[in-house]
Length: 623
Image 1 (tube, rainbow, N blue to C red):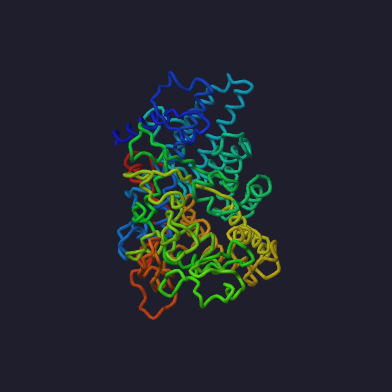
Image 2 (image 1 turned 60 degrees about the horizontal axis):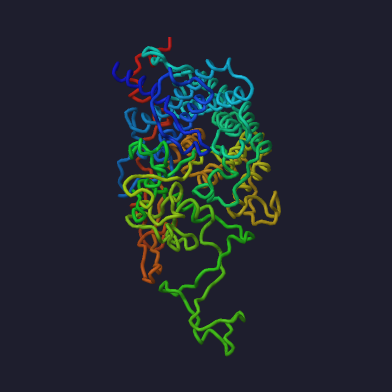
């Protein structure tokens, strides 16, 4: 135990003093060197350099642990080889010895220790600062405290029902590392104080060249989330409305800008982690998650160089497939090639044209010209930006002319587009031939999430159905951005001329829509365990697994003509929710083991890791 603890102490004190370049693109700089306190923490420049190490801690992939957190929810199937899997998170058999809770715990406390070191040094140096230097120090302190609040918010919402050890100082010896857990309410009070400080002292926006820095909007959004998770809807509503009214965020016009390298740090982004494909020689190839994202290989199909370790769940595929389009939106109308029954492109023949070469619509054509038709999009813009479906003929996939660029074999019915570079390359190995590396930024909080949380606060915080009308406005803002049919009665709301589903919603029905459609389809694979935490706080995790475990799905084939003009078929790749004359596809049953294994008091939160229990003899000493 002493060996483990000393190792933790040495690691945190040395790692906290890693230096990162202070250039304009600081979020993509690492360049670590070891320094001692005798030569560091002496100037405002040292404080800003130390703060960069806190940003770098936030970039550690284990802080969000996207794949494992979402495998705990209803959003995924983990890996090829249906219907069997040994993934302990999906099966709900994980323990305190599992990698995910141990690594996430370590990553969050690493960030806390780095933030504390910046704050301690700032406190020591602050009396000597004046003028512009003092202003710079104030900004460093606000960012460091906000990060500490963020890390503790993630610990509070993720581990041990919120009861974890609090560090508001830098341990100077082994004994000071032995801190017992504090109550969930004490932890909550602690992190909210840090976030409130950030909300009051961080700028709304920064000057040019500082994209990615923490803003007051990020602190306020985190506070709103914390109150929503506590079911304090009045306070949550207040914070979210502040974001909406007093900050310059707007929905990006194209939802896909939130998931690719092209739309990084756009107008919708409230909190975002900046990544780069630049390889740092000083860091091992498997330690690049503090510079590059490692998720591209996790979600990409094998044919595009990925490991296909995580797929969309089948219910999610089915819901994306049936999203209704708003046909008043011109983006939902496409000009497409007409295909023959065998899948080959149809062409005009002499029989199709009159003596003047005009078709039935009076348009001049030539014999042999490929026929086209004007038709609705096959799938919604949101669906096409989020997952790859084999018959999505309107969206490229890894530079193929449609989603047919995927494999779709071995019962692989779809792939996540999010976190992959499907829009700029034809194979993930073009970026990194032997190990994962991607420059796609991680969007942690964006305005669409705030809109939907604000809508929830209105629904749950109102009396009877009093909040439904305003909540519909914000749900429909999100839907309209993706060209989706709006909710509510026709000719009503903020966008009366758009298509509506003509349903009279009440608090219960609109809340059901948020829980089972809008939030999961809009925010899949994003943020800090959004879906896992949503299911838990709504109290529906066990019931959700049970309901999904009873569903049956059928498969259909998809014939198509390849880019080489060859007639091919993606066998059994199309998800159907009704029988097409065949038996249900047995490989497509889901969550049967989770429905049996999941227990709220065991699996709702991550347990305190065994690494902490082994190293800390005072962990449970609360007297």
